[in-house]
Structure formats: structure tokens, C-alpha cells
Amino acid sequence: MLKKTDETYFNGEREVEKTSVAIIGAGFGGLSAAMLLSEKGYHVKVFDRLQNVGGRGSSKTQKGHRFDLGPTILTLPKNFEELWKRCGDDLSQHVKIEKLSPYYDLIFEDNDVLSVSGNKSNFEAQIKKFAPDDLKGYRKFMRLSERQYNFAFSKKGSMGRSPMHRLWDTLKVLPIFALLRADRSVYRSAASYVSNSKLRFALSFHPLFVGGNPFTVTSMWGLVNYLEHRFGVYYIHGGAQAMANKMAEKIKSSGGQVTLNTTVNKILTKENRAIGVQLETGEKISADYVVSNADLQNTYDSLLGHQKKKRWTKHKLDAKNWSMSLFVWHFGTSKTRSKWKNVGHHTILVGPNYKKEVNDIFIKGELPQEMSLYVHRPSVTDKTCAPKGDDTFYVLACVPNLSFKNDIHWRDIEKSYKTKILDVLERRLLPGLGRLIKTEYVMTPLDFKERYLSHFGSGFSLEPQMFQSAWFRPHNISEELDNLFLVGAGTHPGPGLPGVLASAEILDEILPDLKKVANKASYHTNKKVMQV
Image 1: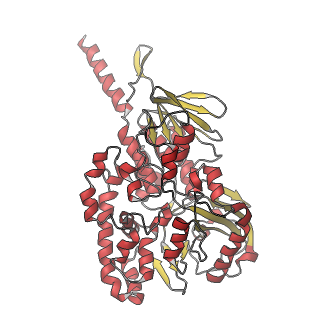
Image 2: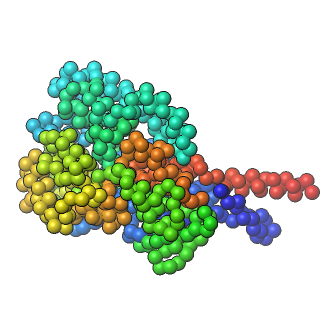
Image 3: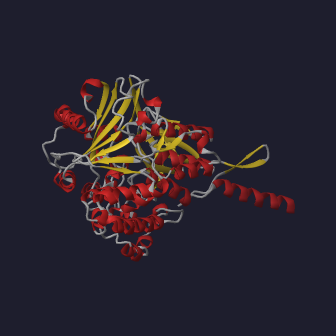
């Protein structure tokens, strides 16, 4: 399957012509793959239809307010650090990353607050205060979370950082899955250790940040609890966009190309292999390999619409469980930096009926009557995201994706739904907010579908359920076409920044290091010359 590099001669010296890779999408999966492959001697060409790099991690600026459209929470910054180190550079010289304290506050309907941080004694003191009988169970749950993390993601070679395109790779770890009770849902796992409803929420809500239903996705996602407490929660100054910009600069400085405002509308094929891409303009770009960081459905149904599929047909993809969508309200407020002093960087307003709310969104496809909200206030940490004295906010509500046959018409209800969110914010967190907003930007499921070509307007591609993970998830090495590879949230290991970066790390493991190949070839050539 791998193409042998072509040999050329220049001034009598033997050279190896660079193997080319066309990468569709400048999200974090595509950018990470481009950095790693450039370092290995490939000539990479990245194409993205948006005007900024970053994909869902891009940003939009209005009246001096930078709205971060995608990831706002960074865990495991060491993954980015390792990526830059692998490329011979030091991340700290390019991007400022700050550890937050607290990580976030959970505010319940009765105004109880659970503040989550890396201070173990402080967190356990809070548990003693409102759920003293659960302290022992909480400690047991955290030991399980640590084992889950060590098995799935702790180092290279872990399940979440290794290729899973062979069924045996998944089958052989099933006994460990059984020991770690991966058959349970995250919520059921938490509920088996603690009885307090607030603590159960605190230990099980994390899959919502990657598009999963906590009552159905595997308990392996409980590893996020240990990951947060052990390594922390961080913020990228300048937002995810700042990281993406520096990654693009690194790719260009290594000889790669990043082309924006350019749509790829077809993956070119010959027999049963990818040979390049075709742009919307009709221009054809030849390549030895193609890497797709595009939405999964877009890759297989649109870019390969002309190609007969063996596994990922439109019907099969439509029948999968896709992550929920999001209603995101970005707004900038005037002269509020010293206001709402109790509101930190991350706040989660927990609704009164967790299970019903999630069931409405994932199962019934209805808008819940009572909503939970995630509130991001980066201006308390990063003064560059808003004019002096002002604030920038991001408020997220989980909503059904567009696969349901319901009467939710987003263009008609956008204003009324935003008003409903405003009522919750003013009542529970930000009194007087309405009269202080000076600029705003709203994203509904329709915007996710149109901006990112996201199937059903889903926020995080395929839902990370057990039988939509590992071998059961679309592989990093495409099952449909030779020389085609997948990175990003839709492939193994799944959504979230750590998962997306791991998909590029897996690609780095699969493709050979051309520099080593060239050095080895040069050594043998010189050896023959010396012998003559």
C-alpha cells in the first residue's frame, strides 16, 4: 500500500523526491497530522474552506470581542507539548497555556456550589459537607477512574493512542474492559459508588463535552475525572485559535502549504486508491496520500460520492448514533469586568432534572423544558479577548441534532430560545445581563451543519458509545480506499482535543519516516561507491 519514494539526481548527488500528502481540513486533527508528517519528510498541502485555521477551534471577532467558536477547555496540554517536541520545537516559546483554579464551578438549582480543582483535600472537604456518606465510595470511584485512564490513554501504546483497524486489537482487550466495567454507562458507574445526586452529576457529566449521553456511553469516559484531578484544566491564551495559528506557521516553516478559503469537493481515485483531491474550482491536486480531517459523513458520502463503499455507506452512517448538537450564544458585555465577581472562568449551571434533560435531548429529540448551561468567561483570565473593562462570554446549551423528525425550526425559534437562556442566566448567575450586552453571535444546529458540514448538525461527530468506538468506529486507515487516512473526532479514538491529537499521533505511527528511509538509502548508496 505504501508508495516507494522516487529517486532523482542533481549535480551528481542522489536526492529523494518528497512524497506528497493532501490534507482536507485545517482542524486540529489536520494541523497535527501536517506537523508530524512534515517532520517525517513529507510535502504536505492542507486545504480548508474556512477563512481561518482551527476548524471548530477557530474564532470570530466583533467590536473588539474575540468569540472562541470551539474548544474552550484544555486538558492534557502535554499532548500539545509532545507534538511540538516531536517537531523539534518548544511549545512554550509560541503559546501561553495557563492552569486554572478552580477548574470550574458546578452550581445546582438550590444554589449549592461544588467547586472542582486539583486540590484533593478541598474537594473531599466539600463532599464531607453535603454527602459525607459518599466519601469512601468517591475514593473507590477515583481509583477506578485512574485505572481506566492508565489503560486507555496514559502513554503511547495505550488503547486510545494505538491503531484499532484490526478486530483482534479490540477483541484482545475485552477482558480488561470487563474488569473495568466498561459495560456500564458513566452514570451507572458513578451511581454504583455514590448515592448523592449532585455528586453523581459531578462524576458523570463529562461525556456531554464530547457529545455523549452519560446514561448510555461506556463508563470508560469516567477516566476524565482522574485526568482532570491529576493533570488539571487549562486555558490557551488567545483561545484555541492562537494554538491553531502557531501550528499553521510551523507547517509553513517546515515547507508545507496551508491554503484557506478553498473547498475540496472530491477525493480523486484510481482503481482502489486515493491519488489526490479536486478543488471546487476544478483544479486537481495529485498526492501520494490523502488525509481527511473533514466531517465523517462529508468524507464518505460527499468527497467519495463517486466511489462504491464496502462498509461506510450513506445508509449505514445515517443509522449510527450521532452526537447531540449545540446552541451557542456568544456575547460581549460593556464595562462589566468588575461586575459578577463570583463568576469565574468556567461555570456549569445544572438543571433540576439531569436524567430527563438528557433523555429529551438524546432520545426524544426535544428541547428540554429546564436546561443546564455551560458558561465560559475567558476575560477573567485573558484580557485580549475583550476591550478594557469589558467581558466576553460563551454560553452553551445542549440540544437535539437534526436527525429527529420534530417541529424545532431553528430560524423561527432562535430569538425565543436565546431569551429563555437569558432568563436562566439573569436569575441564576448574571443579574442585569440583558441591558449590558453590546454585541452577540449565535450558533444553532443549522450553523454547525452549514459552517462545518457537520452531519445532522452534530457537535462532535459520532457519539462515543462502546459499539461506536475502537474497531467499531471508522478506522484511521480507511476501510474504503488505499492511501486514504482519517483524523479528527469521527475516527478512532474519538472526540475531544486529546482524542483528535491522538488520531494524528496514530497516523504518525502508521506512515514511515521518510527521513530515516532516505538516510538509510543514502548510506547504502555511499557504501557501494566506496566499495567501487
